[in-house]
Length: 272
Image (tube, rainbow, N blue to C red; front, side, top):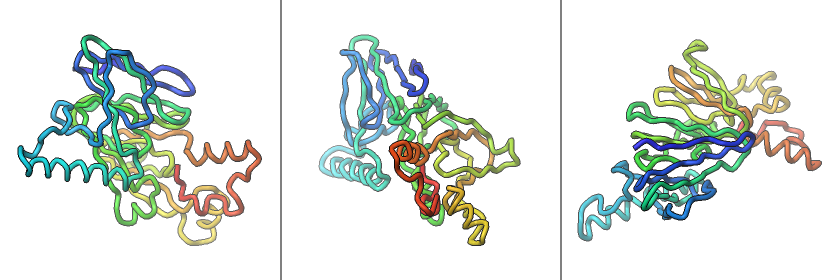
């Protein structure tokens, strides 16, 4: 069944979801706002298995062997999320005995978006962007290794969503929708501005200018760090107009602190 949801608000948007009897959505801990009394809440260490949203319940066989495989699967999911710096648990909400309502929000002022997955292309999202999803949507961690992992800040960890259903994401500031194919097949972006992109888009990281005079000027005084994210191919890309680092610097400056110190963005990596 299709998730009925509405994005409300302006500067700090919220997602209000109308659940049919038996319908379940899940979110990261800390994104829940409110619910009606007939919506149950359950905290689990595992994400959906894609089997109709049911919690992994024996999956792997019965008896001691099945229990061991289930425990190992749970440990692997929790370990991946711990390495990614994510919340270790998900909260699940299910309507009982009639329609129910549950509300979610991000943690920063900004926009929210509902992505509809049709079982075809997956979506990848920056690790702080995920808010909530239908239980028919599978959640995974996609580590970006090698040079991308070392240089890309939030590019090192991406969350992957597959299956069918609705995924709700959030970002800081306003969203900007682009397709690299409209700009010669490639765009270069502040790494902290990447929110989400469709499967088929190639994500990478490149050094800004190189270790020459202009490259160092960009890094030291331009506030751009040493690297930019590259997005290549054809597909939807969602960027945010405000980085977490930019918001933190603005708040620090308003409180009388130095914006970035004498080195500007040299050691920032452009992280958001």
